[in-house]
Image (tube, rainbow, N blue to C red):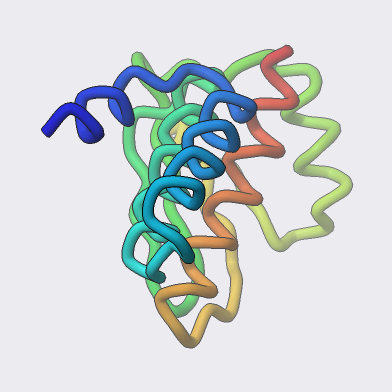
Length: 124
């Protein structure tokens, strides 16, 4: 239980990497399920930074909602959307729609992680 508590308290990407290294030192190779859990923690960190409160992902992409319908740094967001060339759109309800092809769950997790990392970068 103490490991789960510590996992919940990780604040930065370097904290996650240190925690993963400690797990490897203590238990050996990290199972896929634990690696998936660490990916989810990374996604949650990016979501906090990017003011994201909800992500729904499926085989065709993701829908991203913001706390208070307020995306971070609207100027940078509009530039990012323009660079995405139609693969990411801002709907009238202030939700982002990212059109992707994610056939497997691991692809979805990595894809969402990348999207959240990019959004978190816009908030800085």
